[in-house]
Length: 441
Image (cartoon, rainbow, N blue to C red):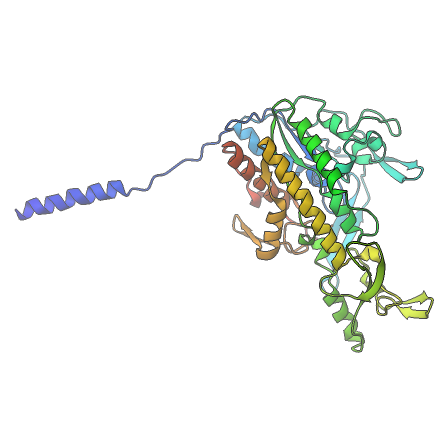
């Protein structure tokens, strides 16, 4: 009897072990209900692979659409061809290189000016000089055009005003009449990504509110609806991205009011404030000098050496930035009211993007929420600690706005996650650790 009980316990134990055996599932790549045969990427500089203040071959090769396309090829995606600069002209428009650090840790960047793809300069009366680049004439899947706004996509002469777009067109400026939206939809395609709209807010922000304007909200909505309707005209599926919060990028969070003031006070403890020329109200256009606060964002390119230098004013020679009569100019500061105005417009743009995407059943990568979360909490990917800090963060390139190859790989994966969730696909994610961050000297 004792042996019988022992036997029963053994059998019961084996049954329990069998029941509790973990199920091992193997990830099986699948295209779900999507045809990735011809994927095209629509967008601006981020889509093109712009980095370090320029468009060049290495950045193009590590664009997020290129990374996405490589992953899509595991589920039946086709060839993804980009308008790459040649090896002989690999430095494209030129870009910034990190060449060292000063004694106090300030990064030193140097412009790369050799092996460029510049073919000339076209003066456009009433507009300015347009840099023209070596023409690209092959097949193309990446229609990223640095500088383009949603506002520009139906403007027929735009191919004469943007050298990055002009290099993709068959005609030479100033004879081009093909608008961007017609150009990107001229050939059949089966899937698209769309990250247009960033420059409709970013241009205003990076100029400190002084060199550009925010695109009208209703105009943005009309053009976004038109573009998505055309991109989905024959039933194509796609993925779109929202517009990031401009305050989430290092361009506005590296050179701070607090840091500048602390530097001044080391030499002159009596200085109590920096002064800026600031927008008086979000409902107006008047500017007036006032003391700067932590809510005012100094742009990355501000030459801090100007602070305290003598400048001529109607009230005599005064130290720059240290009196209300010699304030830091508008173009160097996105002040508190300009920040609020930009965020209001971005919020409206993103509501439009989400609403129109939902009406068409498109996947959405919420770049606004994603990048704000990185700024707040950082990010760990493949065991790598990342954040939105300038240079050390690993995500943003030397211009403080565009991404490193590693940053573009992270974004590519977020697009892929959105596609997988919306369409029941199983596109494998890219190995982020295989892509580099900032290149150190």
